Length: 492
Image (cartoon, rainbow, N blue to C red; front, side):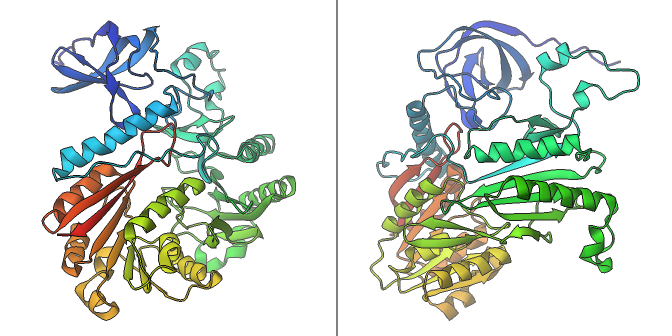
């Protein structure tokens, strides 16, 4: 016989104590730490406990009885449901304080190494419309809040109730097959809202099917929108053709089906409606996930790239390229990295996880030679183009897995680095890469990180041979708990 679970309590009048990880806040209840989203320190709330473990619990605010003095009014209508900007209710100055503290705590707690005094965090120049890329999912079922579900009229006997309305927007944690419909997002220039909403309206008016993630059917799957400081716009449509032929039958036949013709008609409509789009592309993705790194992307209109600007440099950005999503703040981030590198013009620099060679080309004019390594071959080709476009002749780029490329033999061939700049993904550096860096023994290491926790782990692994000289947090993502951090290490 199944045991009846004891109902979880509703706690009344609790005061939120502090900011926690992942944009949540916390308070203490009995011997547990309780994590709660969408509130700020100083709020007095009634909290429903939703999950209870041995050392922590998770709760949901059901009512705020007293608002904190440290609080801002959220500017987005989707706040509280969309998980993208969880700190809109926290003044930006307070966000920066907590991010600075987050970097300090993680480097001390996880790194367990001697650290210098940190530089004050560099806040973002813009706190709205600061992104240059957004990715919108398309689904045949929109996400509904509890209140919306409660207010729905009964579904007709033939099915197809209001909850089955398709949507374009963001995925919601815990509801992978549903999309929260977005009317207006404040993270990017407002033109992207017009483009996304026009796609939605045209698709619904013309009977285009939206993707069903569970059943893996439906035509309209995903829309990626990018723009740049040069004023260019890129839009990439992911379709899922129901009658997709085998690759051997040719790409043209793929788009002669009924679904293909509907997709091309949508592309033509968007091209006509928005002449600002300089790069309009599309693909047929038959995979179970939305990643496009291994997909064949076709140009419908314009170029297969846009150009980003930084100082007097131009950077080619293709549909598969990584580029920092906060363009203006990326300049400040890379300026910190270049200053930390202390280049005089005589150094051999290795730029690990180089992407499209942004950092490599950004520092090249102050170095003797820069060698960039990156996993994505298309990004490396863009990095080479970026050097050529900017007249930079002292760079070399290599594509492959970092732990396989960066070997003792590679270093023997290309020269011992005086400086290594590393900007790994959130998972940090592979242990083999750390070991190779230590054997290469550069004078300085500049470690750019989007995850101070894994950065702290790697710093701990290098502590026997390197000391941390400087720490500079940089905020790239206002209204989120994410923070970048740049650390300078020198050989002991």
